Image (cartoon, rainbow over all chains, first blue to last red; front, side):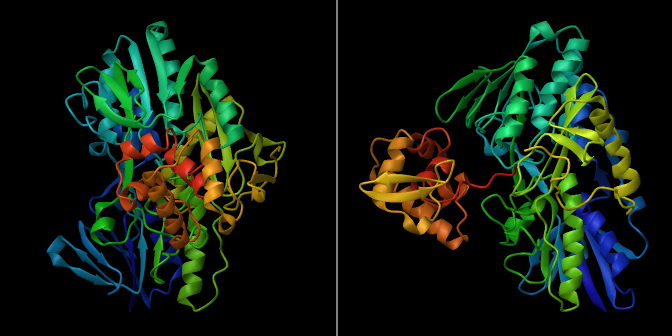
Length: 410
Length: 106
């Protein structure tokens, strides 16, 4: 028997383990999936938690129901990956798993301790994150009682999971505070290390215009150096001080400490990965997917969905000694909530910046690229059902993996 | 594409002002590119960072180093790096060192 070992049962690990298990000969292959617990998070839903729109039951489910009987599902922490010896050490019973092929899908997480003062006395008092369920739930409690003031949303450094979520958070805040009748008492500020609302010119201009229209101030090229939680002010490396009453931080994102312990990562514990084949650049029988890679694509569920085909096809080709043909093109699709029951949408790849137009079908859409619409918002909300009921159950979501220029206007 | 002339030598640069071919880079080019980025003089520490960035890119398939790669590899604090190359150090270093624009996620 040969072994395919998958580390991490999040969006990437769960989907790919299932897909591979369905393609490999059961008489020859055993698929093992390891994670530290059975909680599965619908992470895009965390955005809605602080505003009371989603509850715990919408975003956390037991992962057991999504894992078929043919996969050995092991709940354990992982001590070490030893890729030169083709084995992984678990903490549970000191088990050592030898593998023939390995998929690393251990994700990334926030690290507020990387910024001086961020995890100090203001943490979870008037400084919050919303990239963890606990952070989002704590922020909801705070916002339920908040009567207004100056809210600063700050991205510490890139890359981050879901680069558009901070913008969505601001758009939703503008909407919810308007509904609550306190918008005139709230100042909204976006402090970002980027030179504008976004990196690429067309999306940056469109999203920048939305920020302006919603009276959200932008503090661009802002690289935070420290938080002063006593005086409620953040300071950048170039000495710009931005005061806050409420700081919503997107702390440094890093890959798992496991990657660091195993000597497999870069400075942020992301694993050097071929951006087209998704194979490790160092180990031939190791594939890396989802947020764990260092590829210059968005760290987002949609990206993982588009990566899956490449990982599965290339790995099968490699196993069967064939040439790898599948090339991931960096395709990402993001619904961006803009508040007031509307959303906009961007669709892009390594080579093509987000453009206006219609998606997925030219002229018909139904979704509008870089334009606000109610149908986009419905698409965003529908995604939660798509995620739990299609993606996690291994049913194909009818969106093409390869990026296409059809319907887009240059 | 455009060309930039420095002391009689023409360098091919892209629309955003990044050198197209890193092997055409010279120290004279760096001095001129730095001036365009508002740096009138390149000190020894500036050069230490620029040299490190070029070495790092050479071993990383041409990819420009991230801010963290620079602070870890060139043994310099983030604060000092921002003082040397104000605002976006990773991007400025790449431009001056004749490397590609650092790859972002979007």
